Image (tube, rainbow, N blue to C red):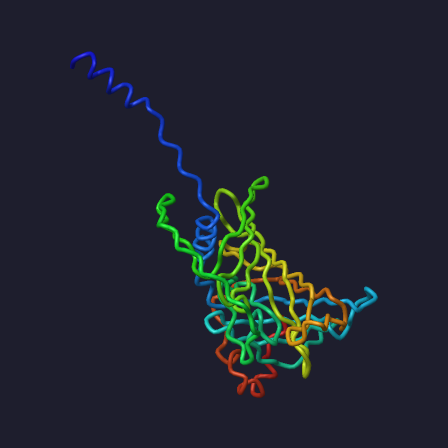
Length: 283
């Protein structure tokens, strides 16, 4: 082999691999969502304890707004059996539930899809739409092809320690697209924490805005919500009315989470509850 050809071969072999182009904030958002969705769908059933804690205007526990439920949920349609947990061994009546964020009921389940748009409210809140983000070209990251999202725009991104932090805003319908900030592992893009808007529905009264800081955990290879710390804000039907109820802080904690392989069908049929009082689950 001629000397020059050998030299060219050696130079080519020693050339370093090109450095991957850094992800844009919009592409990072896409990868975080893609990574979260790789764990979907969740387990068929999830069993957990939901504890709601609220304080009054003086910082003391609000015992009416603070309570604990044990919940057995079918994740396909979020149909669930719930029982109020009291002190000692006493458990409340069987209650049919359908836990969901941004709805007039307790949030959940801990396996909820945090990227799912909120359902359309029967009386939607007026908003001023923002221009749609332009879709960015497809980009391959390993074996994952990602593109820009139509529902959120990444406003800023920074890396702090082992986390990447994104500030995002909805490109349309902010009442349904609730996410505002994301924190994820900078290498794996697994979601650690997020900030999302929500609502507090006062029975027979107004609806107030809530901003939740949601912490994610990890159980049996699945991401789960462990805590949702909320701050109550303005009356959504009257911008001049700030929340003046039982304290502005409302917290939800999800604990004792398990994934049963099966649960009785009657758990998810409230018409069957009266026939199963004797064999109702206590924990």
